[in-house]
Length: 160
Image 1 (cartoon, rainbow, N blue to C red):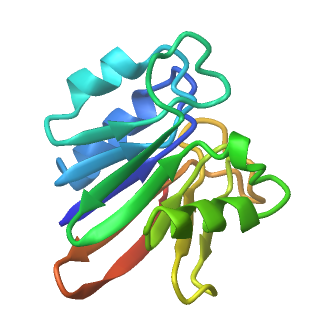
Image 2: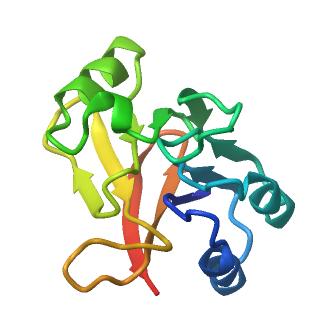
């Protein structure tokens, strides 16, 4: 299964449309929050299962702050990350993922792509931002995670 992971579109879904045109419709899309009212437009664009959580800029959203999804044999903690203080470290996020039996934790919020596989139990992923990237080259980014029963997940970052 191919999972498209995006975050921090901040009401500007043009790059998400572009990504979907370039890679085709994946098997699943995960949006890690800060869509700023764009959730209906995102839901219209996506014709596969869609998981979304609210971010710190999604003031009127009724979506949850955290979800747990079981996709392709993986148990994934999905969150924006601000309640886990991800800007200063991953400890709280990893501990909650472990407490919920998750082997992958995904977050947004920092607008920087990030992958940490140093913990034996939990891989941590941030796809960066599709609208307002903050890494050195400031290119919009997203991640594709390939999962399947009995296989180790494969993580890839892409840049526009």
